[in-house]
Length: 219
Ligand code: DC
Image (cartoon, rainbow, N blue to C red; front, side, top):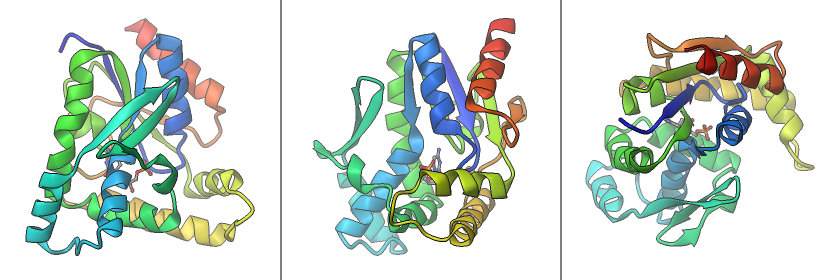
């Protein structure tokens, strides 16, 4: 691979998105939120009322799926058949459905090409759950970002708007998602053996970004 790929994996709320955006800006490359692709699948499954447990229905659905990313400044816009679906993919229902459908090997396979194609033409920071283990096992720079569950839940809660849920529900959903994402058979959430792990529980975003940049510069 001639282009530089930096992978950042970890559970929800560990700070991956903010860190990845900041890192990409500092390095002058693009950032790719691969979770958005899994959310795009879930959104379309829900919209088209596909039974995601039906393998034949899912195979037909996936062969027809047309997800891609458009960069708008520093932001990523996710399109499905050319339509911007970014505003619809972060609801609690789509969040849980994305975690469930991302366990399907056929879904993971369908999204592999999109991710690899992006890295084929440019430097990028990729964030997700299996970037360092499965999608870019040869990446030179791999990081695994984690934090205590209660701190991650509090961060997510603080980001929510007036339709706030209770903190304990946010934490329970996050815990369920951690469990789904880590226990699935295909490409579960886990650090690559050669990833540098960073515990962001007591670190600011600035400190995490500085740590990653210093690791990259040191090597
Ligand atoms: O990062 P996120 O919360 O937006 O991701 C949504 C879901 O997608 C997450 O619960 C697990 C799945 N996912 C995945 O399986 N592999 C990735 N590389 C990224 C996300």
